[in-house]
Amino acid sequence: MISKQSDILLTTINASYIHAAFGLRYLYANLDELQTHTSILEFTSHLRPADIVEKILQVKPKIIGFGVYIWNVEHTTKVVSLLKQIAPEIVIVIGGPEVSYECEEQEIFVLANHLIKGAADTAFLHLCRHLLKQNSDDSVPTETIDKVFHFQEPSLDQLELPYQYYTDEDIANRVLYVEASRGCPFKCEFCLSALDKTSLPFDINIFLNEMEKLYDRGARNFKFVDRTFNLKIETSLKILYFFLERIDERLFLHFEIIPDRLPEALKEAISLFPEGCLQFELGVQSFNPEVQKLISRKQDNLKTVDNLKWLKMHSNAHIHADLIFALPGDDLLSFARGFNQLYTLEPHDIQLGILKRLRGTPVIRHTTDYKMVYDSSSPYSILSTSSIDFSLIQRVSRFARYWELIANSGHFKHTLKLLLAEQAFERFLTFSDWLFQYSGKTHQISLRKLYDYLYYGYLSCFSLNESDIEESTNDEIIDTLLKDYKHAGLKGMPEFYKQFAQC
Image: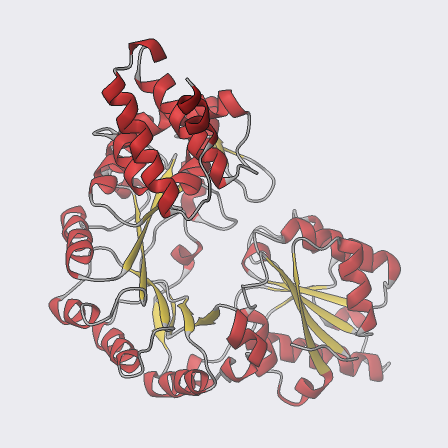
């Protein structure tokens, strides 16, 4: 959104340009008479704090509202610190999930003038009214406004929706975040949604009317942020059939779904969508019943497996499945079993996440019993547990990075089958260890170079030595890699093949 000189500035630092700040647009939509005095500025993390501050000061704001998240808290803290040194008269208001819990120990809380905890859709308006009145009326002392500002948020049907404030540039170039509901009825302890009381729906007719307006403006990339899209099947069906009536080759819908809840009516609707249109994110997280019980996660593993099989066999949806490593009570053997089970179900992506202790989450209750040690800096990743030491955390973190580059990239479809064989986790961990020792890198690895690494890594990890490899086996490795290499659209020949051909 184009900024102008304004009394109030709403801003945040996005992970990348493609992400449009949904929360800022909600605040803007609910600013009532102050909306005309407000601008939105979005930044990305590649900008230096000083450059961000320079752009902010060009707006000449009296009040700045910062959206603070786990991915931007350190960057935002540096920006706020500079602002308080350069323009201390500006009132800094912070909000967002990263500062809504355990905030008192954070540097950004000390620097800020005010904090709004939790939902701030209308709270920000009321705080700004107080602040602007204070600036124009010396009879109102500063101390009448608490640093932590509390305001009873209205029900969802009283909120102004933000969708009209997606710009034409947003619609053309960015992911549009939308929500048909808020909250989650489940209590998984690693997730902030464990603190929600329940899931609350927006009026479905009003919501779909807003979606129609976006669609008519050319929007085709919708990412639903609902934690449990398929919780209320009647609503899910209305949304799916709404988009089925408007389907075209550019439409893309992302939903986070409950993995063990897929009734026949929903399957029927899902099966009608063509390839490239639907993406489902399934938070499997763990297949270990004991770990699930420890973290208060209710999941029918048999139904989860059946639903994954059905989605793979009978739908065109892209399946993105999540697993978390180092949950309380888990160990390497247990996690490997779960990973291998998920891999055999053939989701298109497996997102291997390392446990993070998000501020406020109940997972902290296991800290003593399972000797959970977390990094004190964002993103608060686990460092060790009673059954998983730091060295193993490092190894699996590298595994996750290489898995993203190789398995989730889609460029090594045939090679993966050869590389992983029957024990996907164990073999890829072996390869991951070799790759890090051989290259010393986890980032800035070109696609072309990965083909060389896979060739030499396969020979090194799964054969006694290169001289023991039968010619037919070597030919199979080369042929498989070349098939994937050609499919990736790379020109010429990979380096390993050039060297092999010269032999």
